[in-house]
Image 1 (cartoon, rainbow, N blue to C red):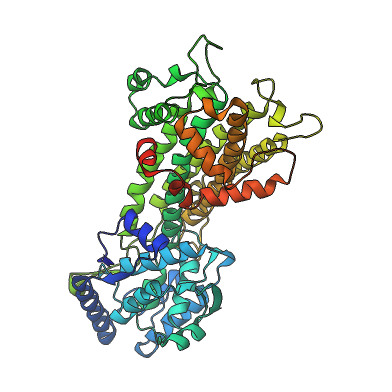
Image 2: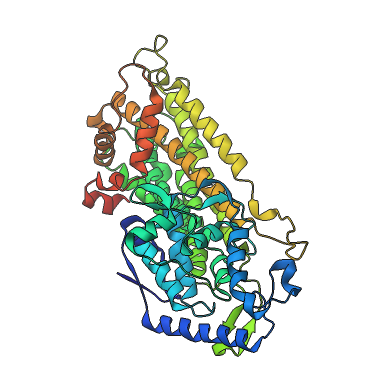
Length: 507
């Protein structure tokens, strides 16, 4: 059970909720803050004060005063009008993360919602009733309005949800399990949609998957090194300590551990003086990409515990301030950084694939084919990897440098952070496929070299990988192999396929 209080949610806790379905509960002190905040909103309405989004319209319409009898209708109109996101739905795990994040933000007690709102959000998480949220349509300020409006629709019994493996109308699911839809009151619609939870939720999934990719890339690169009889001297600790980047030092150490005991690794001058950069510079490149993870995690964990709606209510309603915490620039920049970092992991992986399949660059059978000429082997796998890498380069263009004015120029600078997060996710998917191709080629090359000559770690990975993808004995539809290996690597089975003592040493 994870207790949410609006301030202490961590990446590890999010992993447990999203990937392991650990339930959440509301901290009692935070619930009291929610009650106090709601009392403040009720007082504003009763006194007829002019406060943005409570007794006024939204955006450019903020100068329009709303009559006291219409303030509740205002919120439902807001949700329905803003629920115009388009495109494919976010992955279910992203939408689940959105619900958790929206709940956690409201528990800070600055948003003015009733306790029944946070309780229903909690119940959605714990019953795995996950809103279907279209992924396109957010400018990243005023927050993720369009996507979050689809989340809010579910709370009022409209829209659709993922439930028990199917997409179903929210109203039907609520009726079946006995949930009562909300009738929104003043401020609540705005509090539900004015925030950065879509980009942050996508960012959390991106971070988790990017970290997985970077761990796996080290392991696969080490196997490639053995298959290409790489020079171990380039990983000497003195070289990396001389530069001083901790991540570079760690990757070099990991490669040394992974290749320990290998009869295939060579020393400088034995077969060649130096390796190509895609082999020799693994610590420098992988290490630099790993540096992004610390930055991205720091920004995400701040945003996970941030109040990002508007206006915010402080000092038990004595201070109500309109600001701009909904602006997604911190996450936009973090996602653009992550895009570049993950894209580079694919780029260097594809270069290693080329070295594995190109007979001019190694002493292996051409294109790792069992019968070069008659059979093409892994030739076109390298084409696919090159295509994925090229696509990543276009997706890596920073979304955060773009801005389009909206709401009649009232909202004249936006972050495009959700676009950046979505593109980062696509880069991650492409990179997973690219390193899967490298693993297919590295396993084949290692078998040509002889498993008995390989390190224990390489043999462990080879044994596990061969349970998913068979050795290439003749040409076949390799698309199925790439997809199967990608799916395996994107699951926890990859890590559990390796003995724990080895995982601790090598990963």
